[in-house]
Picture 1 (cartoon, rainbow, N blue to C red):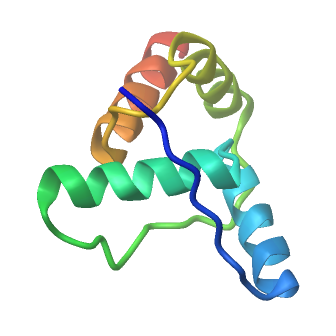
Picture 2 (spheres, rainbow, N blue to C red; picture 1 turned 180 degrees about the horizontal axis):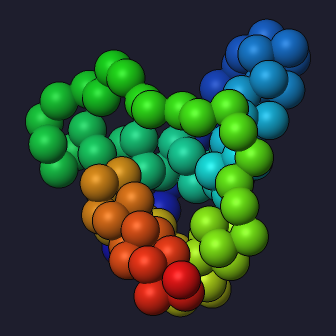
Length: 95
């Protein structure tokens, strides 16, 4: 699949605060945008709410997130639901 560049101008504070939230999920800004676009493309809907827990993830969750990112080097074809389901399964296996 051919790739295309996508540039967005946003407020620096918005970028910084968003980046901090995404770090809590173990995601980069680029990965989050890809997940968002894939979800819209696959469901034909815009996901308007995301669950967020402000607590720091425990070691099991952090390990599952690291394992997930190692196993899924590219998130190009994965929906948000699929990514979260895979992370949940990895966390359950690690317990």
